[in-house]
Amino acid sequence: MKILVIEDDPDTAEYIAQGLKELGHTVDIAPNGKDGLFLAAGEKYDVMVVDRMLPGLDGLGLVKTARGAGVATPVLFLTTMGGIDDRVEALEAGGDDYLVKPFAFAELVARINALGRRPALVPEQTVLRVADLEVDLIRHTVKRRGQRIDLQPREFRLLEYLMRHAGRVVTRTMLLEHVWDFHFDPKTSVVETHISRLRSKIDKDFAPELIHTVRGTGYSLRESE
Image: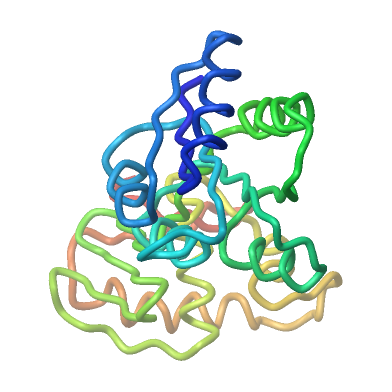
């Protein structure tokens, strides 16, 4: 694995790096938070070992900034701060594991190996697109051909579900469960009514039609029949 060790104590950093290199890993060392953030954002690492008490930019600030920049590398905090609140704060900042100094090197390696086996995080998609239709899940905006379309909250949820399943058929039961949180059939035309309203906003003044009825089955959002 390629591992980044961000540690301001040179003896500790060298001890960790040397031991990991003997196990066949590639190791980079950063002596402060600023250099660590630069490497974390610019290089591809499998695991980062981060001291909390760093000069310039502390470990918490480093990890928060890295996560905000889309860096998903697993982080093992290494620190003398062993209180429960300290651990919670570090994990909430974006850390994945926490090891208190002094530590056993064997435990450090085991934790690094565990983090390295985790599947890579895939950044959550925040903008959905089909043809010229765009749904921004953060801003809660909908545009088609660049024109803003105003939707009611339930219509937005319905469109989001259709967009997430674009090209596939979704049934009435699926929509009731995931859009309305109904786990029974209310025996109403609530789905059909909302689909009709959504069509009037998404398809009426645009081409091609995107919301299709699959007779006897459900609906599908796609560019063509």
